[in-house]
Length: 298
Image 1 (tube, rainbow, N blue to C red):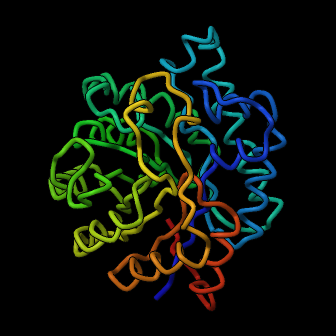
Image 2 (image 1 turned 90 degrees about the vertical axis):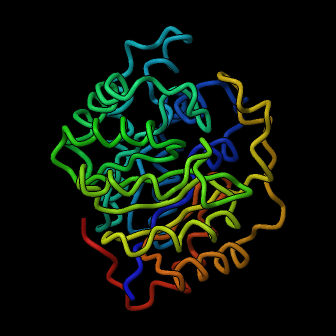
């Protein structure tokens, strides 16, 4: 089986390498203040064995920039994130770049997502900015069917392949964080020609439950879990900073790779890491699963 290896988390890795205090802009703050750190993280993931770099554009949304008075930087920040990922890929010599479209409204808060048509317009604007640079568009951490629909509808205005990654309930991986069944996503696969279906930014135990549901839909599937102890109520408040979340102490590279091994046995062909999963984790995934693998070509 050919395994495609995503990179690991960007925002938390940047904070770990920076002395800056977290802000509501999260990884975007470091993109503005220390773009060389973003480049270094991409470089390290490629060196660890990643096939795909995900752009540091997850949190670049107009409604997140606006309170800080920098909405005018929307386009140039997306382009900067893409250019840095491309330069890291080119320096490495091979690999792909995935343009990250993070959730509008707020992470894990599907109730704050705008209506589908409005969201599609917002995501379409991002997709067109990414199109000249990226190899595929990754709609990630989508918490509801409506949120996912708005994202993939918007992403489809570009000519690049579209991958969809959803986040699930940490206690019940058969459900999106909205409470809807993961199976309610199925009609969108054909409607929007989604080319890979993944689960991300959820507890690895929850991903264990989700992966078997994703298989047999005719597209590659995969998972990239986070390393938080839990998503707290304090973080669910719009504008919260990530310092209210706690890193899980028992999710080292070996343990994480054991989880990924289970996902692969259940049919996953794409694995990587999300928040608090770093280069050491990706290196262990590469050691275990990439010998002789060619991955998949979008």
